[in-house]
Length: 70
Image 1 (tube, rainbow, N blue to C red):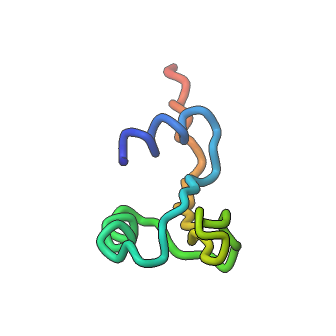
Image 2 (image 1 turned 120 degrees about the horizontal axis):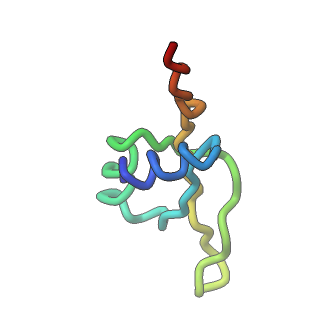
């Protein structure tokens, strides 16, 4: 996940976003260890038409620009 974050950061992304099933506690714990946090944003409906996915975000710092050499 850190490689994806690095790749996205180098291309100017401000955050990573993913969705996870509400009952998938192992995945949520993994994503939280990787810096993702749950949001209040409603996710897509699950196939049962009742439950929704949960949205998680990981903010990314601005890309580091190399300093010009003198």
